[in-house]
Image (tube, rainbow, N blue to C red; front, top):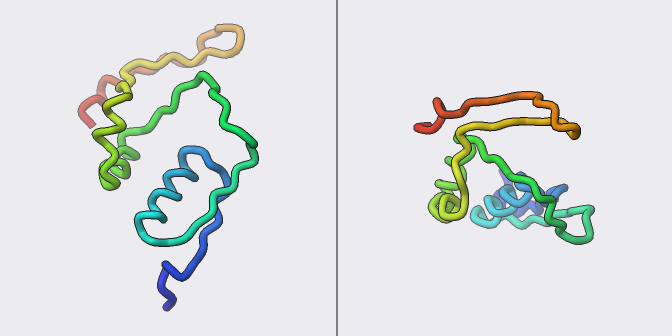
Length: 98
């Protein structure tokens, strides 16, 4: 079997998933290239939500404490359409401990 470090991985998309995969490959010593179609990063004015089970990856990478230093735990969420009509109202307090 070949050594995984002999491979070169192509990652399509520099979103959260693509960048996380790049960081994990970097730590594993696997070469990679990330491709992104956007010519520049544009602030979208939206939030990024990371589920509790995904936080384990940040913890394994030693990034959890830094992530928590500039983030907030969401305990309640509203989703509205472009007219302001309420589409969902979610209570996440039961997930706080997790």
